[in-house]
Image (cartoon, rainbow, N blue to C red; front, side):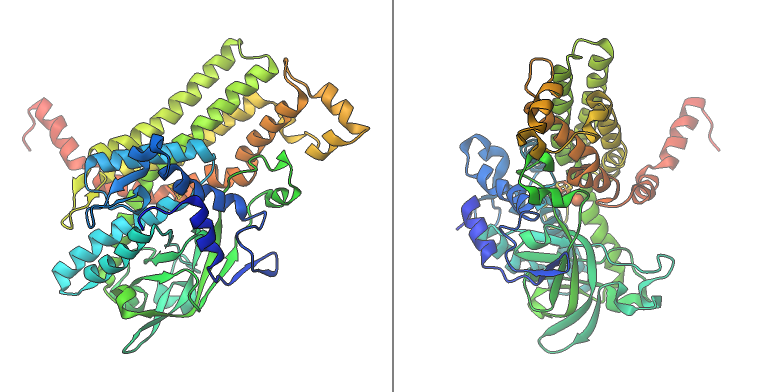
Length: 481
Ligand code: SF4
Ligand code: FE
């Protein structure tokens, strides 16, 4: 089997055995739960689109391991063209879902692990790469979802892992034996946690030799005994339980969970790093660079929907012909296409790693994500401006159905030649993307996902090559000192 259908994916999740908590209760039906379901739908569409011949070129690829057609989310990039297609695929997915569809984190983690384990083995004589390949073949062949466990709890941000008051504030090895390792700790805001079959865990940052126990990477089944999930809230999440358009995006959404490892056992053949502190930084940096590039696709796709929503709102409000509205829409397009350009650019400038897969240009990937910490805020600001204050003062969808309140709403909320209901739905989508569950995925995630802005500034300084730029200035001036 190489391509699962959306229905098969859904069935496969029903067979998982997650230990999951939300709102102070254990959740046993993660597939049909109204708060979780939209996030599952967003992942599921990656399967549905791969079955559609119209999208086959973007959504599928040829496995360099088996020659089979595989989902591009389970592919190791073999060329610059693969990386460009990845960005286009993510933009397509963003357009279809208007949400974080979650599957990219695992794709980026697997591409990072493929390259890093190869380079580690070359230097250290370990056999991590063969272990990774054996698991990866199963993931690719069975078309599985992989979550990336990256961000540690961190506790006192001023202290390294081994100096934390609680040693579990960074994921660590607490025991090694003949069969494998036992780990404790937690990964915060793990995307796709309970929509995934497997999790690939890696260190969150560069480590010093004293932090040997914290230099750990592994792949585990997502429902292994010893993993506990605590589902993350999003602003306005309980609106999803109302079953109306007040949720803003009834079909799709995202999810993040606290993923706790309470003495999780990992067999040796699933361990990809075990004490090699000097490799922790490069490993997470490689993942982050792939993922910073990915944002240039997904956020541009979501941005397309938002620009459409803003333009439609102008139509509904009868303001579309106003020159300042036209100009604001142009600004939104300009900002959004700049994000996409960055994603494409760092892919075009990609290079082949020693392992053979392709890696994005590191400077440009960081510039891409750095713009993403800014532009979605500008885009939503303009959308809010065009929508008007009604976006946050609108009564509920249920009032529209009420025998007394409903007719008033239909009368007073109707737009320019559109019924109140259509205008209200659109306002709710805009509200959702500015302040609700969608804002979590489009704005806060743009700020902090794949690293907060300062992390990109550090890399931009590192790869910006100021010395070369000084030489250029000197050459113009014939200065030879
Ligand atoms: Fe994918 Fe974007 Fe979500 Fe990251 S933020 S997992 S790149 S959709
Ligand atoms: Fe993300």
